[in-house]
Image 1 (cartoon, rainbow, N blue to C red):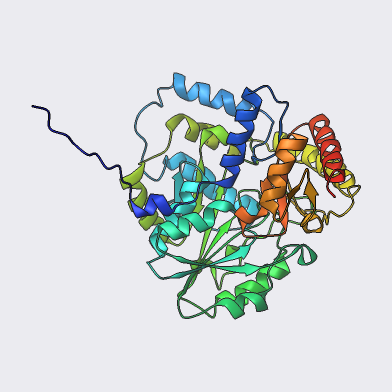
Image 2 (image 1 turned 45 degrees about the vertical axis):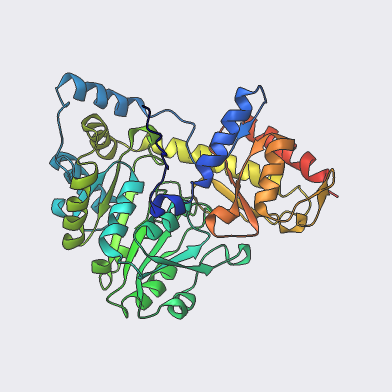
Length: 405
């Protein structure tokens, strides 16, 4: 006798409510269209097109030959953490001891660790918008309540200290920002961060995650400014960085924090129950990256600057777009709101999401809707690809926008 069973698939509310990363979703759509034979120019992902510098790859090969193939300490090899401590002092004039540094499987895990260790359900997390897509998702997984602080292209997408002050409540627990910023390329100056620090120090229950993953890709000519450089708020700041952008090491999955000792210990504990220590080979490569000459990094930055200037000129030729000149990273975040309400073949475009999908299908160029970043006027374009592809992409965009009526 067969007994009928009724299997009811179910998942946790946590995962059901979690939004898929918009950048990953657009990259997936691009790959699907490419597989169907379409000539897609994918400018959705923030991934340098350069190869990892040879001396870093050589260090990884040597690590293999030297037998670095075993489990690693949860917080990372002491030698790598010592190199990170040296880098913090050399590049940022920050004093973090080895015990204040935790190495993770990418800066994304570093951010997740820090959020999970500081945010309780109901705590408010402030996000200057636009912000990197995963900040909000990670904060929500921790039970945090996200509050966006809006900016616009006229303010270069940066908040002021006065704005920050007006959003802080007794429930505010955390501020997360990036500089240079993903998705806008905006860079906070030393003066602007000093003013923000004056606000932060008045709220000792509040932490700040300063995401500095794009630190080296800075076109301002001024030294990179770190919020933790202001001694009166250093104990409230968790500095996040990594290797993917500045060293073209995206696939190596290597990030880190410098933080107050109690935060570092908490992140070590959290990581010990999720992933333990990250890849041994990647860590030895990272050590070499930090302790060697930065000439190859500077060459990449020079190339990014050339691409930025080229794309800026081309985007400014497209009627209706509002475009600013980003000071860092490798993105343009341009305002497409002049095209809201326009149509193509009877379909009316009402949002950045509509426009990004239209450009994917009509221009065969993959961008990411600003809605994923907390902005409802703009789309993000990565220029981390060849000048030839960027020139062709801008030509296609100009033609596609001209078709809208």
